Each structure stands twice: as structure tokens, then as C-alpha cells.
Length: 266
Image (tube, rainbow, N blue to C red):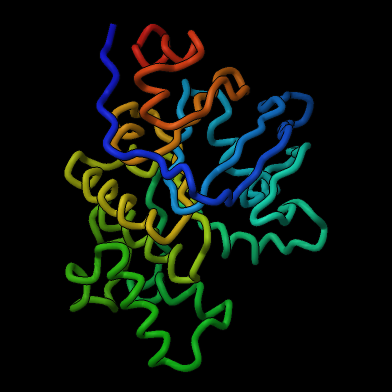
């Protein structure tokens, strides 16, 4: 049996709820991928979604900014609210929703543009800057928050795709936070990175949680223990258990959770 990894951070019991999911089910055509998932996700907290491959973690993550809308035949039932507003309401513009709820994917995906233009793209199309000087300030502030400014300040007009994998992922995070989102979703953001780049991204996640609600999908038990304050365990499309990360890893209520985190199945 594998010993659970040590948990580094405690959850804030007074953190306000940012996202409320109630009885969320997802269908891809006739196949049901998610079954009646309900959970509350706190603001300024990192919530980790864990579970074996194909258990519904990423499917649930994508419901929060309607990325499933882009998949033919996908249908979402139930209700997901951000600050009390139903994200699936007809009045909600998915483009504006995705500015509020940023997404960082498994593989870094910078635009085929310069470093500067990658970060400036969102603020420009959303009209967040009055003139070049303000846009310059947003780009610099976003790169600094993403821990990348010192490494790229002298080559802002070089291609973003020319950066290393870890730098590209931090560039993508800078691009996401440049539009001042409220929530950042991360779908296995470190799985394609080496241990040094992974450590930098995890340190960045810990810093960003002071400003944002962060939800991360990870296959790494150690990563969930290092970066999150709350953890949700999924299995076969169902939410099995959710609680403070320390409780999930040291004293889970469900046998299936214990079996997963101790390596009995995966």
C-alpha cells in the first residue's frame, strides 16, 4: 500500500462559494459521461479533481466555461452557477463567460504570435485597454504575475512558440489572466512538463490562488496534495467524495477513495 503524500495547505473554512454545481450530468450523444454531480467550489482556493482516466474530471471541468458546447452531440443537464448566475442561461454569452473563466490545457497552446501579442490578444478584443501604454502595462503585469517577465522582458516580440514547454505554459497562464478572469480552470497543466517546470507552475498556482478561484484536474496525487486546499474524487462519472485535501488524503470517508489514493486501483 502506498502512503498518501503530505498535504501542504489547509482550506479556509470561511472562503465564500464561487461556483455551485447541482445535479450536473453530461451526455455525449447517447453516452452519459457524468452523473448528477453536485459540489460547491470556494473562491481564492485551489480545488483539485482527481480520479482514474475516463472518470469525468475533465468533462466536469469543461462544464464551468461551456467548453462542452464545442463538442457535437454534447448535452449538459443540471445547474452550474458562478456568483449565483446560471452559466447555461440563454442570456450568458459563452465568449464573455470564457473571459471570466479562463482555461489552461494539458499541452501548452500559445498562439503563433509574438510573446507580447499572445498576452495582448484578449485585452485587445475585449476592449480592456485605452491605448498602447495601457496595453503595455497589462502585458507586463500579466507576465509578472505568471512569473515570466524577467525571462522574456527583452524579447517580447519573439515568437511565443519559441519558448520552452514550461515557459509556454506560463505564457498561456499570463494570456488567461490578462483579461482579469475570476476563475482559472487547469486541465493537467503539468503533465507535459519536466519536474523543474512543474515546480515553477505549482509555485505559480499557489501565488495565483490569492486572487483567483482555481480548479485543477491532475492525475498526480502528490501534486493535488501540494497545490490544493480542497479535493474531489471522481470514479466512473460520479463524484464519490469531496472535502479538505488533508481529510481526503489522510481520513477519507469512502473506501473507493482510500483504494485510489493508496494505489489499489488507478
